Image (cartoon, rainbow, N blue to C red; front, side, top):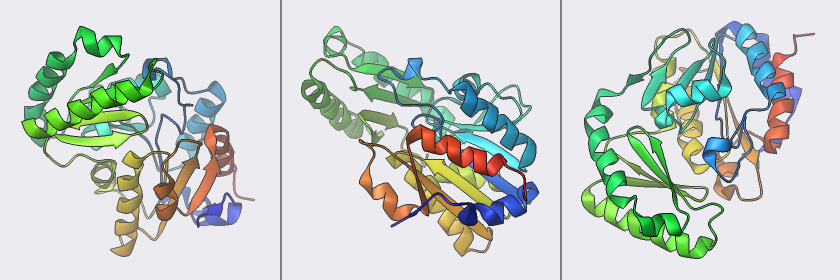
Amino acid sequence: MPATLSEEALAPLRADPAHTAILLDIDGTLAPIVERAAEARVPEQTRQLVKQIANRYGLVAAVSGRRASEARAMVSIGTISYLGSHGAELLRAGWTRPVLDPAVEEWSRRVQTFAHELDTADLRRQRVRIEDKGAIVAFHWRGAEDEDVAKAAVDGIAVRAEATGFRTHWGRKVLEVRPPVKIDKGSGIATLLKGTDVVAALFVGDDRTDLDGFRMLTELAREGRLKHAVRVVVRSDDGPPELADEADLVVEGTAGVRELLKLLAAPEA
């Protein structure tokens, strides 16, 4: 079982902030989960803590399923980097535009066409919402009038997507349809850290899509590319229980994330 939040677990990172990466999921981590993804907001207190951390640590990044430009607009901090579309897009601090993985780019139009064909009146009546993530399209059923009926419709979409040659990925009341190339937060994190002098990293996440990020930190530590790796799960009522198997620490909801950020931002005694 992962430990609860403690200063001791964070000590190696706080002792060498210049060579430490702080990697943060957004939805369910920095921002509370809401019924409609477009209405999610990062609380100002949390945002200010991230700004403090950006001034203290060598590399700080938001790692999101959202498009990188949308993630930056949501967090509204230009001095940190953004991994968007689950790592397919990289928007480094100071850049004006994100860079999309070339292997993914050629599939983007096909994914968009697939989503357009499924955006029917029947699907809208079932309150299944389509979210455009560039090379990825998400189908949400959270808050539908009859979530079971909406989920059944999304199950059908998954079958059709896989028959068409796309990959599917399930999250918390959401299906993502992805190109048939490797896209995950772990690969994105590896790209982000490549060539840096980072020797310690912390990643905070709350959903199945964050498992790849946890596992990448484990792999980098096993290979000796990181001296310290800390994987933090954000616990919630509907969060996947298997996250705990990959985590070193657990915090309670977005309020717990703020407490974590306060500890990271505090200067060494």
